[in-house]
Image 1 (cartoon, rainbow, N blue to C red):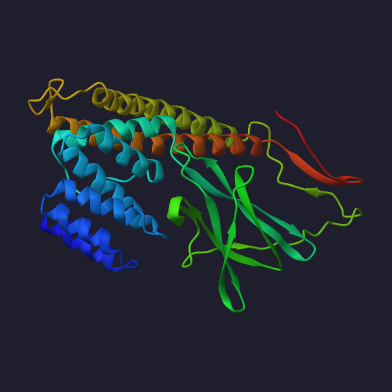
Image 2 (image 1 turned 90 degrees about the vertical axis):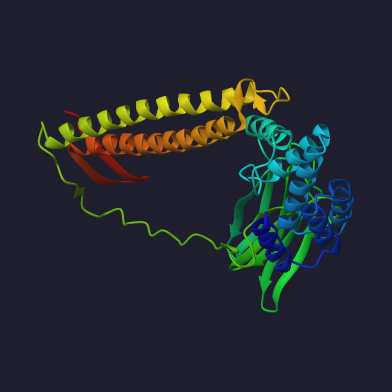
Length: 336
């Protein structure tokens, strides 16, 4: 526990001072959970709360409530935290009265979807970048209130507030290039999500012009493969590998879903066991489910890459020609 609060202290030192958050951390460390919840509520009311502090407040609130068996309060805090960051884990393992509501809410968020905030394609014109924008694709708890853009100018970063309209916000630019990032703001201008950052801003610029070849260019003949080219045999082998990879990935996906299903069906019976599963077994199932899901995703990606490669190699086994035409170019060939 000592290492937990040392890392928490280092985190608080790296962001603007919030005395109530600091007090909440201290009360939590002293197991004074009712007083900690009150201090954390005051900390959350501070205007302009950064995202990491908000997530930390929600985590400590959920754990404090769970330790007092206030399941509904714990679930509400964990739900907000996981909607903002579905990959977030608790800093350490706690008793089932804390971990059970956490696992239940996490599965619900994974199934229903978390908050999604992403950039829109920039609008460009003859003068350069006309505007940039962001989209609020999903806001399950209705937490978003507005957007704050940060645009780099000759005088440094400029902050520009924008309302959410039609599921997003737009920032006019009117410059050859735009370097920017944006924050999704909630109640009291707390930061819910980011697109880019000051250290890693997004860079927008018009795409370079593409030169059009003259119409009188001679026909360019691309490599013509002989009928029965060995490339066809290679493509079949690659496609076979894609099918095998997809099949194995599906098996790991089923195993992952089964592990999480066992946790979802669990309920605390008061003896430290979860429907016949010990807390330790529940954690093992959680770890197993995540590991199998990771393996399944990797195999599906590999299968997709092999499938694309196999199709490309198959087409390369046919003769192809490219010739100019009044409307552009014509690609012609034969499939043996």
